[in-house]
Amino acid sequence: MLKWNDVIRYASQGNPKPDRRVEKSEEEWERILSPEEFRITRQKGTERAYSSELCNLFEPGKYACICCDTLLFDSLEKFQSGTGWPSFTQPIKENAVAYHKDVSYGMYRIEANCNTCDAHLGHVFQDGPMPSGLRYCINAVSLKKVKDDSLKATFGGGCFWCTEAIFQELKGVIKVESGYSGGKVEHPTYREVTTGTTGHAEVIDVTYNPSEITFEDLLKIHLSTHNPTTPNRQGADRGSQYRSVIFYRTEEEKEIALKVISELQPSFDDMIVTEVAMFEHFYKAEDYHQNYYKSNPNGGYCQGVINPKLEKFRKLYKEKLVK
Ligand SMILES: [Zn+2]
Image (cartoon, rainbow, N blue to C red; front, side):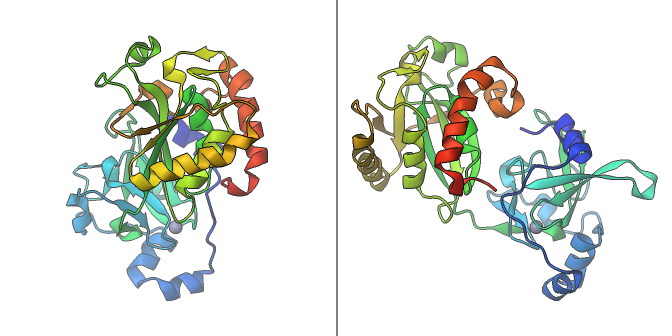
């Protein structure tokens, strides 16, 4: 989750790389966009407060850039700010939005742009609701509501700090959350899961765009970036919470999981012990477990355990990474 210090850091030291870039001349944008869309997105305009019904729209869905269709926000992060502009607490993905210092009109503000095409969206302020404390104040004209065709995949392969770091780097992956699944205890805490008695495994819940990456791709990457042959154990981490597991949501996904396991078996000396189980529920882990690798790059576990895994993964799947 991005917080104010991340926003400031991006605005002063440079923004994260977008998944792709869309670049057009001003004349081309002018041809494609309506005059109002052009004024706001390409000339840093601001729409009149309360001018859009989008302010009061909270039904589920996602919002994309009006210029380049890149997904920017999820309605789950939308809130009623009372300002007259659609307001969000987080972008859909860390690299979706770019930040720049804006000192126009005698104010010191952080401008929010589409990181893919540089469209002006609005500004970010630090007076939003917790836990992020951010308020993305966005022109409704810069956004369009889109049909949500993303899918979810949930699997475990040892400590979720590792698996999360790997899947965050893949093209077509919209979001990765760390959490617990496969057990019987409702709303488990990390401490409870650590005891190994809740039945839960440490897992990641991946939201992905199936037209860019498939369930089969995700499983192949999963099985080749952890050791699926050690029961209830991943390296030095021992306990059933570290078991290798794939959760399926449909019969088709179950078949794909079994097929991928049998296809990859010959590349292992030992038998693959990955559990294939029906998905029941995902419990998101505590905030300090989210985005762990990126938040603690110099930590001992990140340097000693995650870095070597990431290096191996980046070599293996070069063409599938976010550029
Ligand atoms: Zn854009």
